[in-house]
Image (cartoon, rainbow, N blue to C red; front, side, top):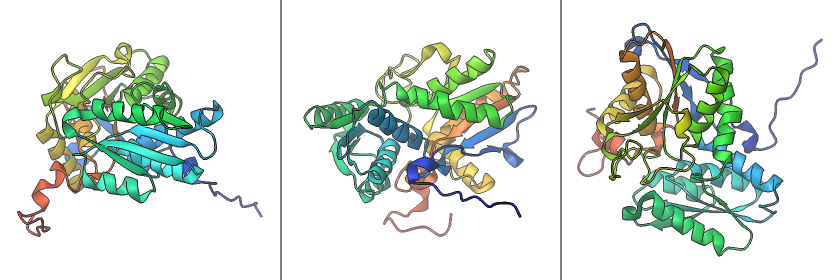
Amino acid sequence: MATRQKRIFNDVTQTVGNTPVVRLNGQFAMENTELLLKLEYYNPTASVKDRLSVGAINFAENSGQLQPGGTIVAASSGNLGIGLAAAGASRGYRVVIVIYEDTSYERKVVIQNLGAELVLTPKEDGVRGSVEEAERIARTTPGAFFVNQFIIPINREIHRETTGPEIWRDTAGEVDAAVIGVGSGGTISGIGTFLKEQNPDIKIFAVEPDNSAVLSGEEFNPHKIYGLGPNFKSPNFADEVVDEVLRVTEDEAAAVARDLAKHAGIPAGLSGGAAVAAAQQVAKRQDPTIRTIVTLIPDSADRYISSYLFQDAFDENGALRTDV
């Protein structure tokens, strides 16, 4: 009789990665082009930022920058804060997350539920204001490690070492383009670098909000697509691996996210809706060199219940509607 082996993880941080890739079918099928979605909400706290959270903590521990009982500090639009709160709790660290005040209510609640301390910054200061406050807290807190996702090299490296190779493995190398939303820039830079190392002909498309197209050289404007389009160009954004920047409106992102939920059973958030909308833009070009497109669904719709994505789900009194 074959020996049975246990498959038990030592803690939650060991469960990050190896998320599934799913083909879009039905009404989402595109002529001559295959759309593939890598579902990052299968990570333990339901977002792609679990990869950076664990990677940053491992790096800090191995380099001696984070000692037992130390403090982790980060600025976040929500997902990194949740990932760090969970990973920090499992390793016994104090976690302080700085987040701008108009970030969705449920993200703040989840961060606190995981035992992290929450610091709010004015919404008009945007992401930059949160980063500056997090930097100040880290600088004045003994034993603190600052996870600055916009600068820290591990943000790129973790996706070059994990997410990119997973895409290459699961598609058996049959991928022509990757379409990825840009916030801190680490995800697209790491994935793009790895994929182009395997095949320089692979096209990498960045996605940003149409009304806040900083990567396209326009001014920042407040927008509703959490996780994308900070009010500055991130140093972790690698221009050299990006072939083109695509723009998606808030309405397009929300419409596609709702359609993915209702017609594909994929509860994508607004950033995922934006990525798929952009991938559809590429597919409609009918470029003969692009037959398989991969994109990421960074998180799940349950992070957006109090946001623009679900604005039609509640009546004027905040009660759940039953006629939608």
